[in-house]
Image (cartoon, rainbow, N blue to C red):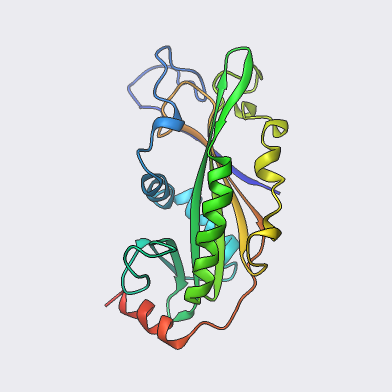
Length: 235
């Protein structure tokens, strides 16, 4: 089951009426072009309170204090070697031995007028994502997840309810139906995140955020050396 949060921001300018979840007469930039890099998209998500609540509650359901860092490099990883930096590192305060490493990849889909949606990067995600996530397990994190971020520009779909203007499942079978088992360690969990632009407004104004844990990560014993490195990140 996918957990969703929909939000819309409107200025309080003294108008007698305020309408939410409506199109702007002047369409803003597509969500597929909003972020210049994967890092920007990850940082944008981790700055969103609703997303963090969904992520933390699924990964650490009983935690009171979860800390995170994005784009972690040394001393956890070695420069210019796989798997690269750690996109998201999560751990509970005082329980660094149970750290979670999350590798993030982006897929973009854009609705078009009277034709199938434009979808890209699925093959790249499946190839590079599995390799890098496997690299996280070699580092030794207690749990590892591959997190797929779907940037979905659904503005041209015709559903009368704007919140359902998302890319139909039939066009995403290649993504959701991929046999991860053949290329990725069974210990690695899979999370799908949906960033949905369903009006002509900028994604910072009006959006849908969805998160689904497709497969839970299986914990392994984390090396003490790695735990010590994580503790030093806060020093």
